[in-house]
Amino acid sequence: MTERPVLVLGATSPIARAVAVELARQGTPLYLAGRDLPELWRIANDLQVRFAIEVNVGVFDADDPKAHAAFFENAINRTGGFGGVVVAFGYMVEQSEIEKNPLLAQDTITRNFSGAVSALLHMANHLEEKRSGFVVVVSSVAGDRGRVSNYVYGSSKAGLTAFTQGLRARLFKVGIPVLTVKPGFVDTAMTFGKPGTFLVASPESVGKKIVQSVRRRKDTVYVPGFWKWVMLAIKLVPEKFFKKLKF
Image (cartoon, rainbow, N blue to C red; front, side):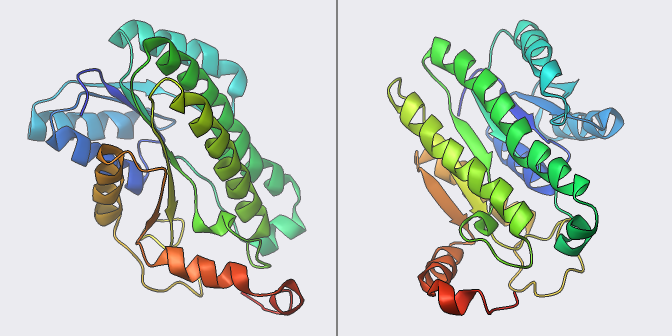
């Protein structure tokens, strides 16, 4: 896919791991970043053994945007530059818990939106200068319409989706595709045991779809694909009826 390494932010998440495996399978070198350094090294060693690729790791904290400039400067110096980025970190707590403790709303918005925006702007400047590469941003179907059961999380993802649309228009001018990924329910710790989940997808199937969509230079992809039609139906429900729903 690219001779330069791909930066994976939030690399310990199941979706990020699945994307990393698919990229490694194609021989793409990787730079895995997140907060859990021992787990990052474990993943890196596994990928190096299985696919004989170069894998670097680094500590990245979405909650600390002031440290992002130093992170990117160091990572770029270590690798000589990136050929793409996958932003796959996220944070979700129960809406009921947020309503009891509004500080959790700030945590949600900082990690899902503010932290992602900071990272993406740094990376966009780098790729724009190289005039090549790609961007993948994992958003969520929850951002398509605010629902009573998760409207704080959903609003953070709605903001991320809107930001990614603008970034796509900016980088289109230099030929860099920006893919927005909108997963439905995926088998991760974020969704495990939560009521109302159905037709849960595996991270592996999501990872394959993401890499396939990058190759095809798509703008937006729902995974699994039927979520496009589910969310279309939800968005068409008039507000006077929608506000009475409990999901």
